[in-house]
Image (cartoon, rainbow, N blue to C red; front, side):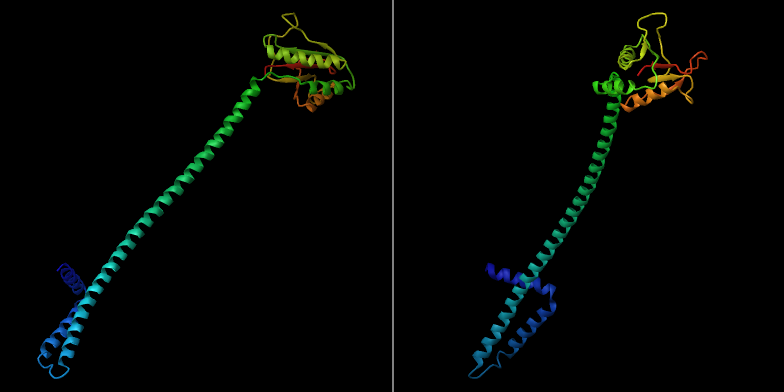
Length: 252
């Protein structure tokens, strides 16, 4: 009973989608019905059986075709779902790629910011770190300055109010003294001590930057050769001697 109901339902579903085939079935069934009484003789039973088999076969074909239609419809539906899921997956992949690009950009910006911060930290450390003459620089300076074209009195000044400047000036005094120069370096609050020195950094003071004394130019090259910059500046004092040399150590 259940099989028959399912068979009829499948046939009806199929016939509603394929009315032409239904007409073929009805035509064959009608021809059999109207020819049934005319089937006589020795092979009448065979003809009738064949007609019934033909009708049964068409009905079964209906059922098979209906199930095939259902399978095709289900396959089309699954394909649609798969296509939709694939589209969604592509969208998610595109969003992921966009996020990855954004993250990579942000990471690069962070790295760049870190480089800038590191550079600033190193700059600050350099500013905070006291100036000093290393043992290697001291050895090289003494050797080079010992060969100066002439030696005389060298004034070294630093602000007595700046301990770092005074300490660096003392190291320079030690180098010059060991190289054979006569160095005048006032300490404490004496009459010729300095409370403040002009521009920041270390400078070699000469009568004229355009025409410096030989010893002043030579000393500048010696210090520069070991990585200590000492730009030359004009004295501005009319009584400053043309061959005089002075080293001023300003704030770092």
